[in-house]
Length: 205
Image (cartoon, rainbow, N blue to C red; front, side):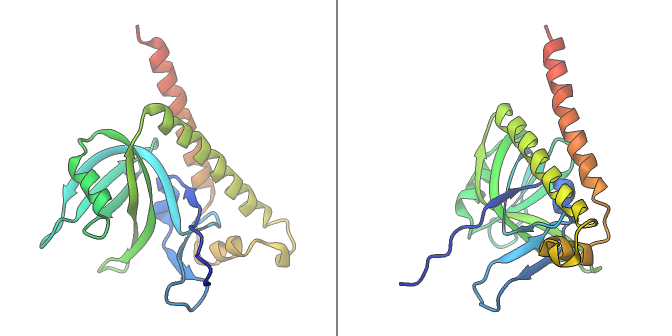
């Protein structure tokens, strides 16, 4: 019996880092091998898990429905997602949801090159679920922790023997010329936004 490929872990990432990612690769020549997006902090991603505020939905299809959704994270940065006939459940959710709403999304990163050579990244959703504020807040905290873990591993590469450096960190250093401090700042801003929300709740009568 052929081995059934296991599903890739869905990684948590803030939109600022996700939108900076542009390099994709496969780890084998097999036509069905998974395509990975390389995050600037040195993590390979085949699926992502995000929670944020759905701010806008629009049918941008010409011949058939093709829904675009915008989801904003606590820093005000935007994930773009697209769902059409091959993602019927996700497309149905985007058709029916009334923004603004907190949503949880699991999906696959997709890159495309614009006419002027820019590489943009979006999410092809596998599932979209409406959630409450507590779920959004928990995602922010856990995503902050995962991002800091990646940054620490990335920074540690400066002190390690070349042979010991994580291969994806090495790849990120070769493919991107981006300061990982940008993502440390995103973590700080996201956690501060949660504190500000809590203070507003406490201040309200």
